[in-house]
Length: 433
Image 1 (cartoon, rainbow, N blue to C red):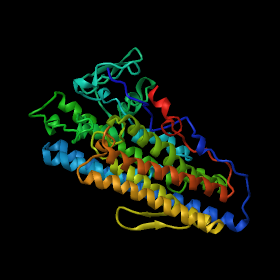
Image 2: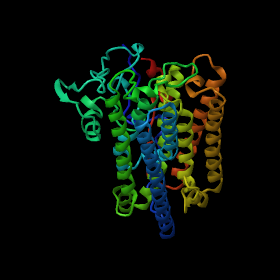
Image 3: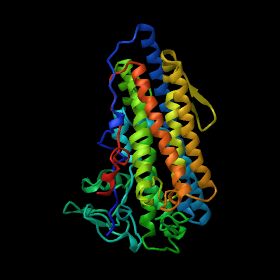
Image 4: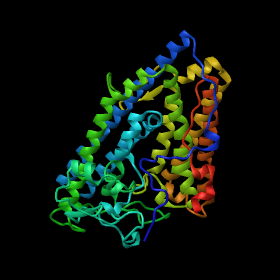
């Protein structure tokens, strides 16, 4: 039996780090600054719309590539679908800074980016995966191989694997967060299969013949294709929903328009600080480094984690500078939190800008090692001193930039913000209990 550590739904955390709790006096900005704050919040929403539109466009390209793969399964069409999946991750990861502080986004996010997942729920797995889990009765339910499964003691018809079945029945089935049936990581597993290399070189090696109806491997190729197609269609529709939420009149934009302008600025800083500290530095990076566990890497089937982490850091920087380069090369920009901080304390703005650049550079160092053949799961392996140090440097940079984000909240005289925390950073001994 294998038990995954700290299964989470979209990476949500309950703990708040002691260093991440701010105390600031409530303050009403004068009229001119209030207008500036509104302009900053509007730019923030405009960039969110652009990022989600790019995420949608690349998801549609992925859907098209999956259609071509399923129509004519081959090593080439499978690789094209994998490439499209990787391309889709770039704009999406830059949206993650919008999660924390934006309830519309955080309530929705688990449908598209929840991790880690118990992949035995979806399809066949290697014997090393085990056959049961004390925490998840559906650990090896393998819905692709079974037209009927049992959820909470009740028989459930799984004869048709539709988007509605995945989102309405299978996703988080039985109230178990690790039962991730939809989104990028379910699609990733269906394209790559399990990465059975541990902390050695190599990603998942699912054969294209798993989808070849004429020369089927591992059985149930028709149902596997049905699942992959349903999951990619669902990803597109979920992203269409979020694009609508950021358009004029959409729920996410309306929320920002209706709250106080200062609260809108707090939302921006909440996303920056929470993603920097508890989520990325803590749960996505430090936890895996402490455990030296490849199961704790974000894109664990494809070995694409170095890209996802880098784009998260780029997204945090983008939120502060209010500048985003779209997939088509055009730029969306405008009044920024950086402008506001600079007006209040120019030295702090320079400091925070520098730290954001340091973090991106540290993530690029991780990517450089991956591009040279040492994937992220190898970098966190026990005994890899240089790889561990490279990852730790990025963690340290994230923690350090969070301290300056805290100071920005104080300088702007905003209400207290509680950033997301992580036992991995705040109480690492608990990770091993």
